[in-house]
Image 1 (tube, rainbow, N blue to C red):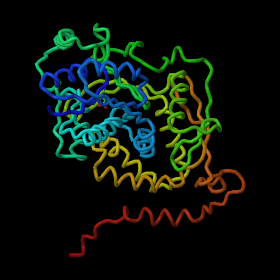
Image 2: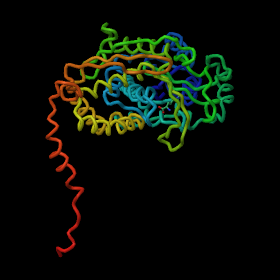
Image 3: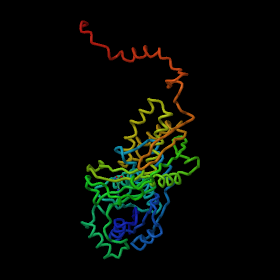
Image 4: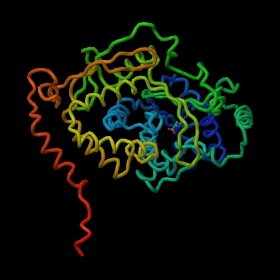
Length: 396
Ligand code: ARG
């Protein structure tokens, strides 16, 4: 029997994948990644074992997810198409890394995933696997199996006695981890329809958020958030806490028609309360400590960094090189930011840093001005000189 390591979530698709691979004479080892999706992992493990798996690995990857994926993306201010903080996209290369790892441990020659042939996630799993071990075979049952509909899939599950949850159709497809929730399909496929309140998993609506604003103070060290209101948190705890506070105030919802890598546009709803607060605060602190040219140059690079995460190219030379550049830019991104949270809005109300480049004695319009305004005249003459030049047509 050939061994295969399957990325397993416990949902209908991956459960059918496990059995389908068994039918084809594979020994199936299920790999379950804990990325903070708040699931009952004991139950999922049992389901895997009674649904055809010979062995199950459950790994808590939250710490690595935060330190090596989420925080680098935060430092890069990486946002896809202006609205997506990349929660799902950031998780995939990490899961793939461990699929490869388990395959090596188990001497398996193949890995498998439950993604469809229309999405980005298949690309992320497979490109990462190819980069880390090009020898491994990759099997994507959902792309090739015989089931033409969800009903047929459920029929197969029932016939094979695969333990699946309540089989009635769920209204949305949801992917969740510590960094955010991605919600699609069902009624959301019509971009003219306002997302129904029941699609949101974490956040309150602006209407039901408290009528009183909440205030928080965040402290960063070298681009990494360390404290909330003066209290130290580890990365996981800090994100969890901000998800709670942000959700209460309706922060971090977005609604995006996005360009998928496979060429189609799709509509997805996102929730990223902690991410939204942290991105805003981080960017604000950068405005205080980065000089103009560095800030502008870095801003130009952020969409590219986001694109590479979205495209599944985490382990690519460009992304890794950009990371080195970003690390250098974060040396002085230390300080505090005050924010006001109010009915879906996150508003910065103050910022300070020991490395601030802001000089009140240069900026002031009041007494104590140190800026020598007489120097401006010569500066402007020379600055504008190239644009005064006219061709001298007499010179041949
Ligand atoms: N569109 C997002 C991405 O490509 C999320 C994909 C998964 N979404 C879901 N609802 N299952 O990263």
